Length: 370
Image (cartoon, rainbow, N blue to C red; front, side):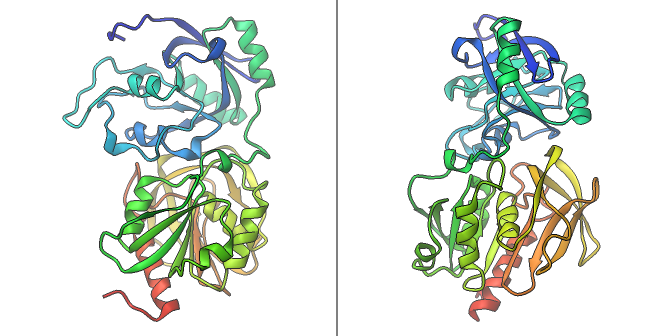
């Protein structure tokens, strides 16, 4: 770095004892130690959107792209009010930003929000290790190796933890319509700004906390309910699944990512944890209705088990590993996808799903968009 900050040596130690050498970037963690579940993301750009995606709560993001920070950061590319990730791992943090949109640099963003990081890491070796052995907890920072080893060994993953409670909004708030006439209620399990921009194109959006009951949602008179993305394991979120169950059949429902898993859970589906998750902007998904292959943006560690929902049809399949990427209920006006059609960041192949949500609301209410 050439910003006047002193370069300090740092280490990354995984829970299995594997050690990586690097240098400290971003904020300084307490006592020189930060922990979290280490996952890798394969995007080539969009690092600010990735870091500010609340779905990364509890996790340390390792970017496989070797050069991160090239075009700086700016206020328009935040996906939430602040980053919720536990840390960032990069090979080479750009020393100079180069973009007319930039108002700051990535290192400054991390420092501003108290997010520690480590640079100079052999991210190719790290990615191969996680690919072979799976995502695992780790510890990094400027503390000595013995301290970091102990911290990594004792670090918790994301299994069985309610991380949604750490990212959801405190109270309901509205996003004005930018073109449509629908009234949509969006559950905030860790919702992204780009999703809200798409939903507001359909109508006014009321964003509600994850703890909001079905009766409170229906009292708002929505034409449709959106179940957002969010972090962590869907298994402990029993109260949320109960509310979704109460909504089914009473209002059209559209879910993305964690919202997809929770909708599936409300229908009785089983979920499981993927070895290293799907994190990136280049995952091929086949639309089974059209045969079209969509290149998609993804960010999840958990997955719906195929064949565990007799009351729903499989609509999309991941072409890398054959996992479930979408479903549509047979008995209720509800559908969901595992990936991110809003593309923040990522390709735009799947944005048609927001139009399908509009069509579902129109069919249910009998009110067609003008």
